[in-house]
Image (cartoon, rainbow, N blue to C red; front, side, top):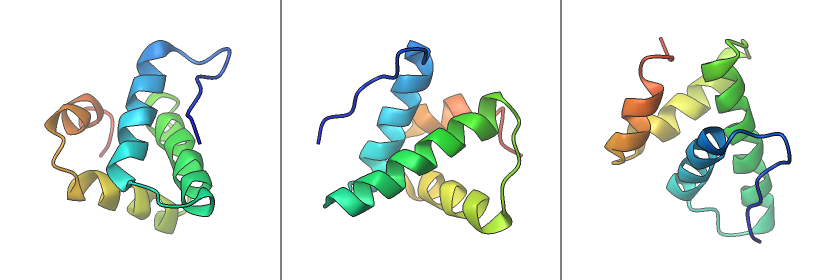
Length: 81
């Protein structure tokens, strides 16, 4: 399944979402859908300051912390507590 940018999505946000999804390496459609949804939540948390359940926020932070991608951490770190 190919990732597509939403019509009104900023290119920078799409790059962050794509990198986040690639970190998770989804192996089937169900996992891909889950991670795509988490990526939207990540963007909402970082740029819109939305709050979600602790479990959801922890899942996202765990994926970021497990990543070896310094670029993603660097982009997101100023926004995440």
